[in-house]
Image 1 (cartoon, rainbow, N blue to C red):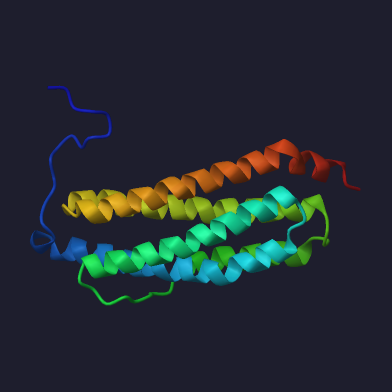
Image 2 (cartoon, rainbow, N blue to C red):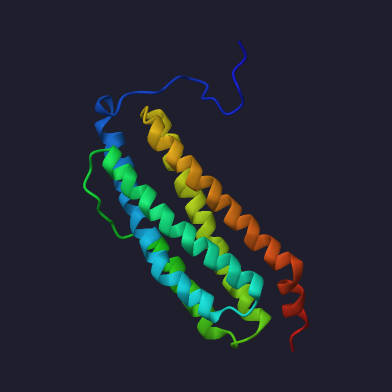
Length: 182
């Protein structure tokens, strides 16, 4: 029987008890992304306030609501793992958020150029989240944590969709408007 594309070449599924170091890394990474998602809940409203384009504002507002759901899902994962819900500071997300704030501060309010900067900063965040959720999903599969893997896959799909939506907003109008600004 031919394996489906994406199936691992070797069956490495183990129980979490057999891989305590890997499970510890996994849990630490969940704590990290939990901090990151909570940080976004406080950061995204600032991006909404700074944006001008209705499509961009709508997209960020939608993602803010999804981010709140992601926080709840991560809390569910902690419960499934019988771990205390705990955040661990995510230096990467803190840096990405600061970069976004710097872009807002260094661009003129009400301009398409600022909106382009917000999109760029937001896509960097999305790419970080996509990488994190993709890696966590694979670790969950490896550890035999299928229910956790399914939750992570759902969030991963939403992060990819958010990234694509930002690209569409940029390509549909904002980039061209910014190019025409003096």
